[in-house]
Image 1 (cartoon, rainbow, N blue to C red):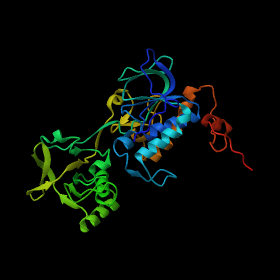
Image 2 (cartoon, rainbow, N blue to C red):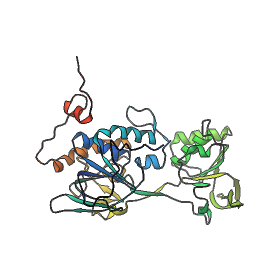
Image 3 (tube, helix red, strand yellow):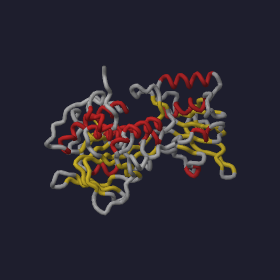
Image 4 (tube, helix red, strand yellow):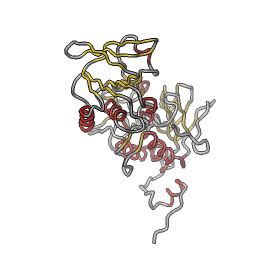
Length: 366
């Protein structure tokens, strides 16, 4: 279930006749964008968040809301939706305003140093800083190139799993060789609330881009006759009364075989597109935004980039890394927001000022 945005805490903005004046505009409401709100809030920097999706959470919620995440510090395991909900709870004290279902289309620096920002729905801002936390940008799944099969999209053909329960007890064919394909094949093949009637994993070769432990687990399940793995490529299909009933699979030997199925899941990865961000005049490298590692500032002063959208020497695309980047970017932005204010590092454990900002009582230590 998507997290409901409490209007008493954070409003979803309506259309404004004049530009909204703010300290910061964050482009992207994924985990890193949400944590950016928190880090800015600790420095008393007010933020508005824009995201093309209709709800917060970014890729975590759009692509794998129920997939477990194991590398968040002090959280042994959580799903993408649970992580998003926790981050939304954490940023409640700061009253950030969400502008969802719209894309930033223009960013222009004004003579007074602020940025004019406009979205696809006509929402306008005058902001002192901009934070790009858009993950890989706008993204679309790479599709299965078989003539006519697209008419089964979202009824029997799926490129993402939003409701695992709809696949329980069904005969599944899963196509792909990366982590998503392996993870969902294992999820549906093993005992649990979403166990399928049968699972056949299809990949064009007997080598994978997935975690070795997942590959080994898949092979173990095949040996135990809990699922099947077939090498080949989907080259056609058969239907009956408007329903997809069989896939035609051609192997390396040139022989075409037929696989019966109820539902087809395809995981060929994402095709990332920066979209309008590519036209902002930022320095780019391999379609990613170049930043420094002191403030994670881009080639345009006052614009910062955090999370998967940026690139620098040693970059690792981890949520953990994005959280670190958000903290340093917030401190980097402070001089633009408060040019006459000296910003000191304070700790949420001991700082009465931060306790006030967070709306919590200062603890008393013996």
